[in-house]
Length: 345
Image 1 (spheres, helix red, strand yellow):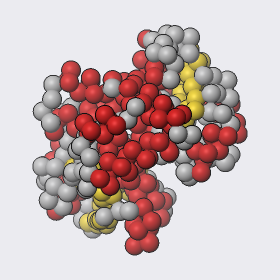
Image 2 (spheres, one colour; image 1 turned 60 degrees about the vertical axis):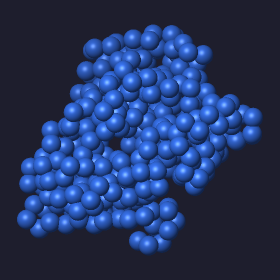
Image 3 (cartoon, helix red, strand yellow; image 1 turned 180 degrees about the vertical axis):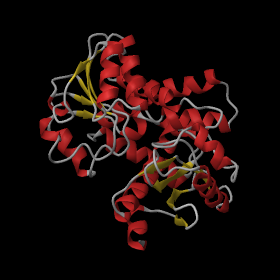
């Protein structure tokens, strides 16, 4: 465990167990350099503890990069609860998790993620004040708004007629489809949840393919909006698109897959920039912003993507390499958001 923490630069990993409620949880704090760690709690029926550990470590590190690039003064953290949210989630279990969050004394703020909604957060908050998202509940819509901003930055600010293949139509993906159709894009979708696919097809008239075929759809943008690791040795050669811009966390199975995508002449916009609308929205609750202020920050993802793409092109870097450079510069040198963005051209 210490080797994994050293490799990824984590500060703290808390393993939480409660016999009475059956709670098995891990809270990973990657960095508090820029402020208290912020990241949601995910409830998912992981098959093994190793799978759970790997996921929470990757997700918490991604939150550090996401928050730094978003220009908000939070570090990165994440929590997972092992279990099926439809079967194992109880009020007592959520409150016990809240007690563990509270024991960190404000080092970590938790929020919504897969398997956890705003009502669940209220139970967690009963035992800990360090919870965000009980007032601002529509993070999926905010995330989708940010994805649209990133796509506009890569399509000359015009999505009309742009062909987008959306993988996953859960909370974020379904909101993204709605916005894409509104902007005049031509949308193809896939999801293992057949009821969600039918609903999207009936509501918006989008095309549907199988989950296995979504990678090989001829399109302008492939948009992964499900789970991580979907861009790997097996799937990348199947892509028939010039751009990958999606809302899922940790889309690359490994960092080397960024270079593999580049070698196929595909533009990959880092997921931690594209999907940062949700955390910007949640941070706005902490900062007591009105929604107009927060939405302006989310829409600024357009500018961030443009700036990072320009810098990458000028310095013969991938967009991920350029984004990582600026994130690490901000973390290592403690630069405030204003000077950070002024330096990106």
